[in-house]
Image (cartoon, rainbow, N blue to C red; front, side, top):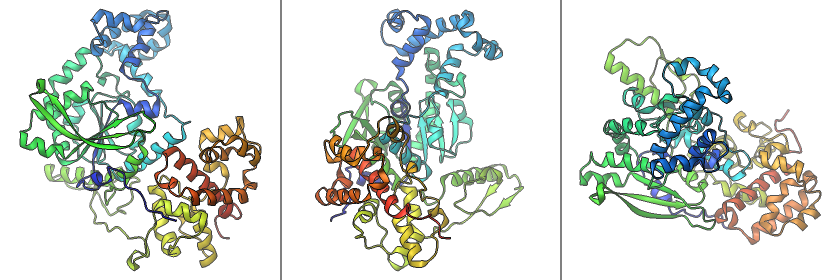
Length: 538
């Protein structure tokens, strides 16, 4: 059976990049993973606080400013909301909490806006969105240099854990950035309500200093590819920033920048194929333009997976601290109080080290020096079912498998290889791999499926056959079967028949179908190889 991995249209694009990218993240990402509103929906929410009985509350303000000029609408809403907040019994608790802050000049509107975004949580029920986010978390570890965003929420900090955050233009301009493992929140953040850019005066102040911001960002744009994700090309925020940047460049340098800019456009058409094209954005009434590569897609998981293939050799958080401390040493000539040698992979407690200096050598997986081939994920899934993989068990288990798990969101079938290693070598595999072994079926299921097993269970395999209108639906419903542990013989036969007749699903099938199929194979792997005994040899 063929296990050739298909090429995505943008694989060649990413593999040709000489440096790791910065992600320029827009509100579309917050909408996707946190169900947060767009600008219009956000203002409608706050307008309804002012006119709670009027379903056209937002239109009252739109009419006053003569159109959907959202900064102008925000200005009017802020004025009326502040007056309401300061007098209405509905906000008595908030007034008590923020009394001194408001006396100091804080806007109640921005305080409530910040609280609204701080309360937002990641979406937890959609299995595919969970898979996307898990992959993006792994991308954050070594596959991007940093993040720029106009969003106010905390999703970047949650996904890009350990990155240093700079809020607003002031911090970005004077905060001592190092250009690696950093988040630039250029329109403010919900953790600093006063930094939020939303009203006309906020944008006027922002535009006044835009040239300085553009000069700062230009360094990032020149040194790194920039991937815009979660934006529309017509977004005024993007238009403003790009316009300021191209004002700094000659036509010749604009051509160089073209190779650095990638715009990801989401299409909600279910069967929309991924496409790569060249796109041009015009400014200054059409007198100047900038060209970039545009990717159109309806599923972010393949995109994140391709980004994951590009990695820093060393921990980027460590590199940032090294750059920062060496820069401080060179520019201030201050004596070093402490010098420590640490594992180049260790990012725990880096803040405790005054200056870091080190030379690291990345260890190849054991067996690599002997030319052993490391399988890709799809080969492992197929081998678990057919037992036909030609892998060197020792080098796979001792060197490659734990790293493959990390690179694939801890979602590979591993029990077959752990059990085979223990049987052959009478020893436990590396501790980091043992920790990946599951002790119960529940650990293989996401929150949504576990809930469905309770409220909408499938009583038997016979009921599953009746309810599954397609083979793909069978994989979706299988985890809800009550006696899932007694279904191993039927499951094994179904998997073998399906993968024999539909071998390409695991490579090129629709993302939801692939996700469901792989989940069922992981369940099969646990039932056959992981459940029978404890993971650890006594």
